[in-house]
Structure formats: structure tokens, C-alpha cells
Length: 166
Image (cartoon, rainbow, N blue to C red; front, side, top):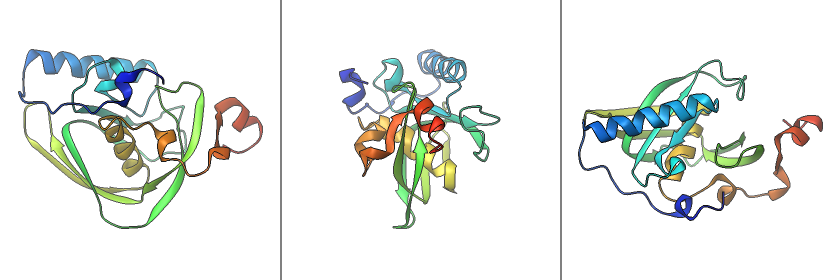
């Protein structure tokens, strides 16, 4: 947090299946897994392109979360399917050691492309919807604290856990 690249809009990918795109995806995947993240967006590793990767499976940072399939999404768009929102705790690899309660749409449809340019379209809810919204926010230069309504619900993970809030 504080790096101006995280506050910029990412550019769309214009060429699919390239060695450069596949190298970026390997970097995203390696970084996400090394940090035990639920997802990662290209701007978080200094690349201003519309690419995100996410997966939740036996993640110690989110032990309560339902599984989310491994997905690489290029040039994504997210469409809320309901006005209903829910607040939930989020962390971010760009804000290490912090968590905050963030409102997100409960149910969304997302659409984008895989690394070869094939369409991916899914309707999701719950934690899967939260992860997709969080990661695609990065492509618009939005960090989760910008979405928070109540900064008293923001703090260091260890302190929140010790206080029984997480």
C-alpha cells in the first residue's frame, strides 16, 4: 500500500496465448501461492494489465472459506446480480498483516477470458463472489479499505484475533 501503481487503472490485454502473458501468469501464481493468498492481480506485482488469478483450497489464511476453483481471468468484468450486499473480513497481500470488514455484492456474474482467449463466464455467490470483486477492484486502482464503511472494523490481524473479532 502506498505504491502509486496500485491506484492506477490497468490496461486490457490485447494478445492472448503469448509467452509474455504466460510468464505473467506464472509470476502471479508463484507469488499468490508463496504468500498463501486467495488471489492476486497483475498490478500487485507491478504489471498494469487486466489479469487476475485466484483459488481457495485449504488456505490457512481463510480456513472457514468454501473452495474456489483455480481461475486465471483476463480482461474481467463483474456484474452484480442483486443489490444485496454482505460485510466480510478481507485481507490483501498488498496490505500485509491487516484485515478489514468490507461490503461486497452477495451474488455476481463475472465474465472474462482464459490465457488463450476462450470465454469464461460464471455466476457465483459468497466467498467466491467476494474474491472476484476484491481482485477485479485491483484492476481499477481500488484497495479494499477504500470500500470500507467503518474504519473501526480495520486493524492488524493478530490484534483482531486476540480480541476475538476474527
